[in-house]
Each structure stands twice: as structure tokens, then as C-alpha cells.
Length: 431
Image (cartoon, rainbow, N blue to C red; front, side):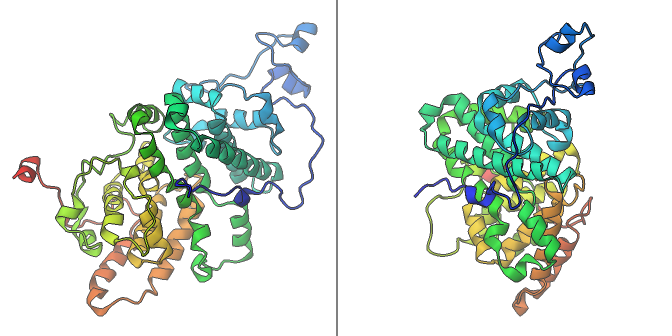
């Protein structure tokens, strides 16, 4: 059995109804200003293109926005992917980087990997197409490009999973982990099919019980833990590489390391999730993203062990100001949600769904975060509707009522004040 369960390419079928392949025509989206103004093909030669040289015109190229590095041109093979041309996607990705990837740094390390890795390049093209689809919903070529580049990226990802760590080497491991992280962002926005279903019916997904489809992004993410364990030799340098992109000012940690440095947690939460102080603040030398077991179990996993790190992470971001720079910390929930937690969701464990829905509410603090806003809004509301119908034991009704008050306030910042449980001091822990 493949331990790296990934999304299926059938979920991103490029054969969209009504699509007919058009005859290709060469079109420049990154040519010089004069050729673009005259709507003619530019060979993009620098410093002077052939057409401007022949007609003795001043040849100038558009300048990238300040602080944005020029992304390398995609190879000609990328042009074989149907939909919006790859060069146009590349141009859109470069000129709208801050909108597409808020909080992420476009630096030389990223650009070098983008140039050398078909996986990273395809994922970035798909994300750019997804953003274009979000900005211009009816435009069919953007939808087709997103589906197609997703399928290409998945094929590249599967090929890399078939290699050993030694075959990949440090640069290959860097690229594969970067591609996996970016794919989580790509899998989270509502798909075109979900948009269409939402337009046809406003029914809550809880009425259809299609949880597996609703958690497709988490299905993919659950494979990252085993992946990281399989490349432990290269992991320290790979994490440093990812730090420079996802969290360049994090001071040595890509995401807050709640496994080794537990934050204070609301006492109410600890009681709700049945976590005593030993469970709540237990330290672990295993990376948080690789903590869950890859061995399937016969029944649902224990609640406390499956949610401990997620409770810590969610408690931390609960009090974190929702700024673009902090959005990466909020996203840590995605990278720490592993198979045990997903198994609890699929068995409709109410407390697990409370935690998931509450995190969706926290993400609603970012109304301009294009790729998560719609799913966060929809899932926060549908989980709240479902939780309101949960049959709670009489002895638990008080704490459930208090936790639902917490749930309703998830999008508020600053959050309501609660009594906190603090981790023991180091001296205290040694005693």
C-alpha cells in the first residue's frame, strides 16, 4: 500500500464539458511594450527585440514591481498544457505575487527551485490559474489551465514519491516538500465543481454527508508526515530552505514549534478535549508534521493523542493578530493535521469537528485571503449548524454550551478572555 496517499487526477479531469481544443496561435504576454501595443508577436530578445531593431524603434520591456524578482521563463513543453498559456500564468504570478501568496517570500531559493522542478512549476501555474479563476470566474481557459496543471503536478509528485531519498538528493527533497506545501494551498480553494454545486443548491454539506470530498485537501496533506519521516537525513536543510520562503522572519522556525515549546491553552479547552497537563504539554522530539502513525488502525484513534498538537497550535493563533505576516502561523493547522485527526472527522467525532470548524472560523479573520475565504466561510457555518444538532450527554451540556460560545466568537480579534493553563517551567519539569 502506498503510504503517500495523494489526490487522484480524476478529481481534476481536464476534459471540462463544453471544451473544444482550439488551434494554437503564438501569443506573447511578456514581450516588449511596443510589440504589445501593436498586438504583434515579439521574440523577446534583449536588450532589443528583432521587430524593434528592424523598424529602428526604442525597445523597452515592462519593469517588475519593486522588490519582485524576475521569474524564469517556463520551458516550451509547458505550452502543451491546454487553457490559459503558461507564459501568461507566469506573468500573472510575478506581477500579483503579494496577492496570490501573502506572507511568502519570492527569493532566489524559490526561483532556482521553480526553474529546475517541474512539480513546483506546475503547482505555481495551477495556483496562478486558480487565482485568475477567482478574479474572473466565468473565464473557461483559466478553469481548464487549473485542472490541467494540477494533473501535471500530481503526476510529477507521484514520480518523485517513487524515488528514494538518496536518488532525490537535497535539492530534490527541497523541491518535493515545497511542492507538497504549495499543493495544500492549491487543494483548499473551492473547485469549479464545488462552485457550480453551491450555485445550484445552498444545502449544507452535512445534509449530503460527503465528508471525504469536503476534506480532499486534508487527504493530500496527510501524506506529508510519512514523506518527511522518509527523508530525515535531508530534513534539517530542507526546513531551512522552506523557512526562507514561507516564514523568512520566523527566527529559525518555519512554523511555531508547539511540539517542543507549548503555548498556554485555555483551561476550558483542556477539559473539553480530555487533556491533562501531562498530555497537554508533553514534549516530543518528532517533528509535528510527522507525528502521526502511518499504520492504519481498526477503529477511530484516541481523541487526546490525535488533537494534542492541533489544540496547542489553535490556542496559539487564537490570540495572534491576523496580519499578512502571521497568516503562515494560522496555516500551521493545515500542516499539522494528520491521518488520525482526519479519521476522527470521517467518523463524525463532534469534538474533532468542533476543532476543525473553529480553525475555519479563525481563518475568517482574513477576509482578503482569496484561496481560503469561501471554504472557510462555508465550512465554519455548516459545522456550526451540525454541532447545534449534536446529542450531548446531560453531564456535558455545560461545557458544550461554553465551547459553542467560544465557537461563535472564533472570528473575533482579540478573542474573549479565558483562564489559561501554562506549561510548567523547565526547573519545575525537571523536579
